[in-house]
Image: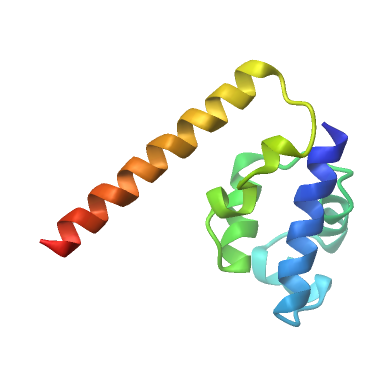
Length: 104
């Protein structure tokens, strides 16, 4: 689990830095405390779903993009990995349907 949290934190930090935003400014724009963002970026805190939504929005990405492939970074219980795989498959089907409707 720690490896997953660290990978998530590295992604967050990388996207934030790529946008040239300081940790303090990012935290303020998300309505989070700077230390909370620091803990997340170091993989020292397990984010709640609402926090993931706020962080992803602040980074300009979807939560699914933020978490894409994260299950391969560490050992997830098999049920959790299965649920993530199903969610990804469902999202892919939804995107295909949207494209098909758009192409019509």
